[in-house]
Image (cartoon, rainbow, N blue to C red):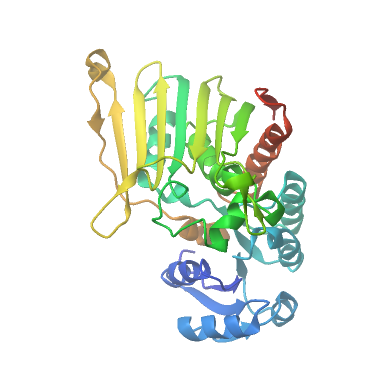
Length: 362
């Protein structure tokens, strides 16, 4: 079973496609056999670089050829919906980049299409690959901290207050992320899905109720730079209630001076607590995962200890295993659809009067 050959096509050959090509090619008995892009020249260059035999300038031609079992959908967000429907209709398994769609209605249609086609359908929520998060969930589900009572989660970036990813004031690749008219849903749309998944997965419980506030801070005269109106949210704060009854706070910002791209999750229960961090950098510039625990007798002295971690199965490996086992594993389309529903409802806060919050019953 484990060495069943799998042939994979990559749809969308931009910058993120490189990681898909390398990660899938490294898995035993998996072959990347095609690259597909509306820019045929880019698809050809990508295939030459990665030793991929077939190159296509459109999805329809690739599906007509059909000599593959699954597709990694690495297209822009707004292309996920129409392309995924075609892939599912062709009976191919689908591994889609996040977010699954640009709104809940599209995500739900994609989920139903995949279920009706009986194909494996999963989403690349990348922080599932963090060993500290996987171990935290395991401890929660095993009852190590008792009943979950309170959760805190944050995703902190600082590219609006520093220039480590370039100067957002002069580069369109960053300015569009600050402008609603250019398709941005702000920090909520960009990294909100990640921290929502980080929190709910680690706490081993879905989010049911949300109160949310979003804000775009002044960044330029009249909040305008060239054709970009800087009105997409820079920060959001959520108060949430989980299905298990726990309360929590979830927040994210691009103004967290001193934090490059860091996630933290703290989970408190009736018998102990967990602290997951994914931040800081090693000598190669890679983020460092860490899990600290306060359990058993340490609860009385508020002593926190580092918990040993080991490598975990990646989303890429899990997707291939799902195909071989004949069943969708997490993170699934259905899970990503539920997250999209929360994001859609939370965006209503953008239209609320100043000082008013929006309550979301998901």
